[in-house]
Amino acid sequence: MRDDPLWVFGYGSLIWNPGFEHLERRIAWLDGWHRSFCMRSIHHRGTPDRPGLVLALDAWPGARCTGVAFAVERAREAETLDYLRERELVSAAYFETRQPITLDDGREVTGVTYVIDPDHDQYCGGLPLEEQASIIARAHGGRGPNPDYLLSTAAHLEELGIADDDMRWLAGRVRRLTAQQKG
Image (cartoon, rainbow, N blue to C red; front, side):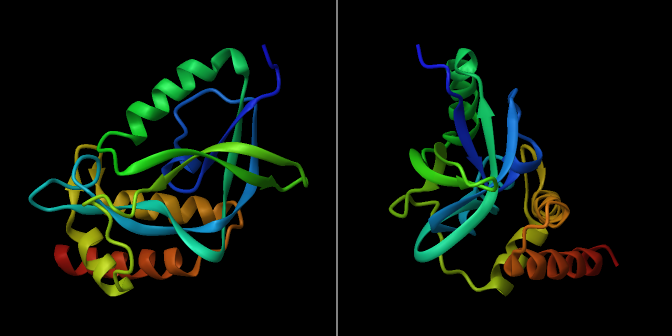
């Protein structure tokens, strides 16, 4: 049995709520993909009648997504993958892939990475940011309000020093929209 760790790449809620034990957590880069609110959420952050939006990795030539890589000891690989599959593959809109990622200390590893299926009916890539903000501001699903998901992810990216201009803009816009809804 191999004793090198299993790596898992997180770009959204896995950053702040991995839900599995890990040995190491590193800032990491994944080339050819970008973090995007390109998946309609009908379970966790929305409903079939009023879908929300959640992040996914969307293929994009020349893109680079900065996220967090988690090292998992091989003895916990099966339970970690079972947990991730139950969490991430709830609607089959993601593919489980193995992607080359670069860690902030220069190591290159292969990480389990969940990416969007662009042919799935929940895929909605290319929505204008204003439309994304409007959807997120009013959606609520089984894991809570869609704005909470966005704001927590944006806050944790900022805390880690990961720049994401779209996330920063969306967080500000959704704050304003939700304040208007309450007022």
